[in-house]
Amino acid sequence: MVATIDSTPRADGFRMPGEFEAHAGTWMLWPQRPDGWRLGAKPAQRAWVELATTIARFEPVTVGVNHDQFLNARGRLPPHIRVLELSSDDAWIRDSGPSFLVNEEGEVRAVDWHFNSWGQIGLAAWDRDDMVARKICEVEGVDRCRAPLVMEGGSFHVDGEGTVLTTEECLLNPNRNPELSKQQIEHYLFEYLNAETIIWLGRGLDPDVTSGHVDDVAFFVRPGVVAVAWTDDPSDHRREILVENYERLRNVTDARERRLEIHKIPLPAEVVITEEEASGIDVVEGTLPLEAGFSQAATYINSYLCNGAVIMPTFDDPCDEPARRALQDLFPERTVVPVPSREIILAGGNIHCVTQQVPLGSR
Image (cartoon, rainbow, N blue to C red; front, side, top):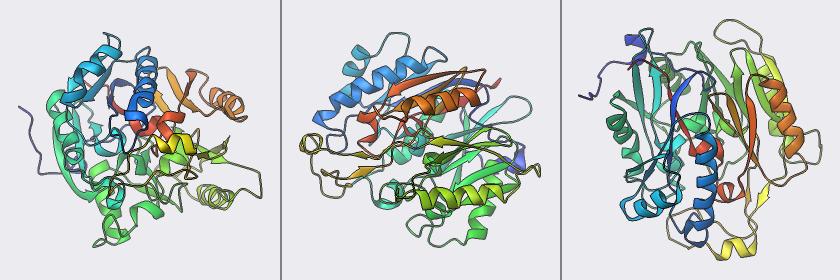
């Protein structure tokens, strides 16, 4: 029987593994909202099929889908990908789904964060998204604890050894937890991720969409090693953000008191929604308007680490191949697999945002 645990992962000896550690599988959610995905989400659904099929080369994939799209998703996805009816408001499972933890015995537990649609700016309603983590825990047969914190999975990374990487722009934003101080938020991160050290970066790249999620600007390659988004172009308005984050990383140590090894990954141009693309998006009051000329934060840092592979977004940009080579150098033991992702980023996120790993454990 799946239980809701009153104690914290720290108290019970659970830790959150790094994404680079072994997975039991990957969860995704099927896109369908016409006010977020153009042309009734059909181009996005084709992108989902390609992405899910690519990940399934390396580990099992489950796709949750609303009841009215079940037959469509089941018909489009290959038979070896599990498709389950699981209602949601949108497809950003990194942010609405659970964060999984393990203990020394290999037991798996999940943290269920409170979800409020990125500070109540993304969706007109998000009650079903706030239930996604609990539903996945039921399917996986994993106990959960409900953290007293509004947070999304894309707002932090962990190294599996007690270090959390996040941004002040997001976690300290008054649209998330206005009643909590920085110290109180850190306390909850220590308790629910079993962390020892919080590395605070300044800002992300998408203040109007996620309030600056860290998974667009930096991630752990392995303990002690971080990849960061970077541009040398002094005219790029994003450079100031990236330089500040880089300097912060240069001047901190992790939970094991290591200086970080930092690797720069080139940054592509922003993806700008075209008139044609915008004309295919429904306008619904209460949702973030996706209009022609709106710029989305393209970045290769929003890759996904699965068993034996790095699934890297591409944008038909000159930096695609240099970024692939840079990531391949960082992950010689993995295959870097480029996946076209314009249809994903048009709605505000990318490959990391639409995936959620389940760590390998004995359950």
